Length: 100
Image (cartoon, rainbow, N blue to C red; front, top):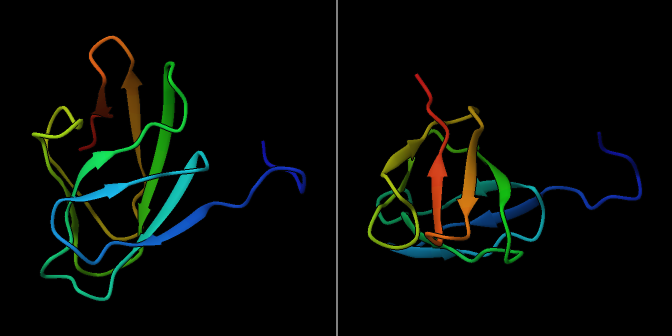
């Protein structure tokens, strides 16, 4: 549930390879002007405990999430299809919800 007292979704442009995303709201809208170079390898947790994040890509060119940082498995964000990530503070990894 969202009301006028809660922050609106954060918007961020990913323009580099192996970028670190630093979300400040539960939902982050991802855009980019440089589709060839944009990838996300790390996410800075906004809180230290368990939490969930939603990511929504708005570009026609996909935005890959890369493993090797604190993302457990690689996934490609598809335009206008939000995904959910779950943070496990024990492993310090984000897990992408299974999407088919």
